[in-house]
Length: 238
View 1 (cartoon, rainbow, N blue to C red):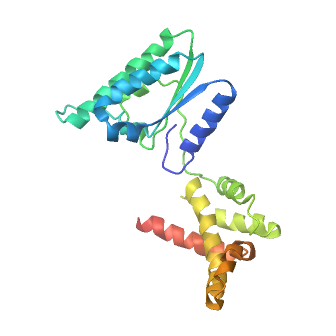
View 2: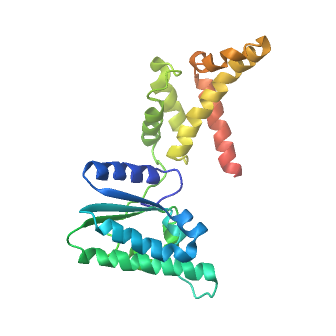
View 3: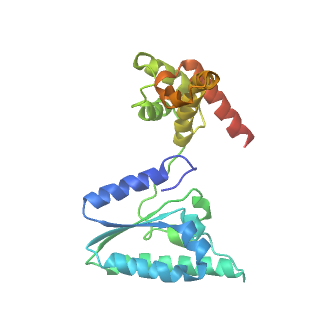
């Protein structure tokens, strides 16, 4: 699974894991940055033992999130860190090659990466990775609106009678935002809507009422537009 950050790759990985669990798979979720940061020299051994454990089950799924942390294209270097990453990659290649020789176990390997162009070609060649799913930015207004509707579905602070029209307006002008950005936009709009109520309660000394602010602070189109403008500015200047 590859694509820019915030496009839903890790979320899809979690969905795959839940489906696999419901089908009786044992799921191993590997956080590859942690694997390499804390004990890179032991990474090959951990990968080997992890796959050995997975093969003991009738059905297993192994998920490597942020695979580029160790599966980058190998280079001719003498640095210990690069050599350790190369050793980890070689061990992963060996384990993937061994899947075909393990008929008693249904073993699925899922790689997730923000930077597929950095991954070693040996890992991505035909016969090792059987399916490559790309996660692009939501290209169409309809796609962005659908994402917004999902995140706004249970938001009681947005009037139902206006929700569809307002989100259509936001979707029209948010080209280039990811699904995660759109979720953040709705959250920021809620914060903007709550500010006047928070200031009013603070002025009256009713700090005990702050917990009730979200129920009163209804999100209006102006709040959504302000959150959109702020987020677009932040992304452009990042």
